Length: 142
Image 1: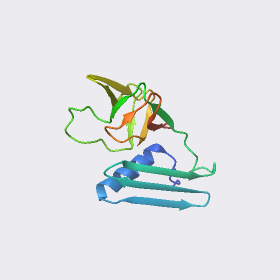
Image 2: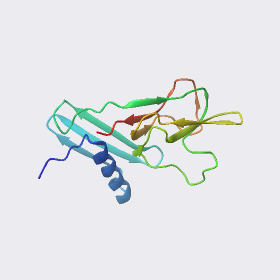
Image 3: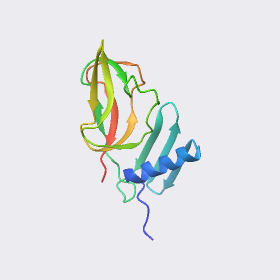
Image 4: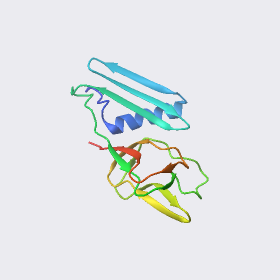
């Protein structure tokens, strides 16, 4: 039996889904040289923390930040979507719309810009954001 790679985004997504389904708030796995911590919250989704050196199974994953293309009011979902938020983490393609910026009556979609695992939403819904403010983190899928 091979060791589980806790730095693999699909493994992290599966663990997060299992925690959410089971109604648990979090999980922490510690090994020599590294820790994986997942905290699930209804308000802010899942927070994933991966620490450790470059040992196999706990390699650090550089996350890319999606920034606001202009100033305005941030929406994680289309304002007409009455179903609530999507769970994080989730896989996205580079052209997937992951949020919106509203300026008056104009609604600007925010594309992911890269394929990967959308792990964090860094801004609260309905918050005012400025040009270049970080909105999301996307980790590459290996």
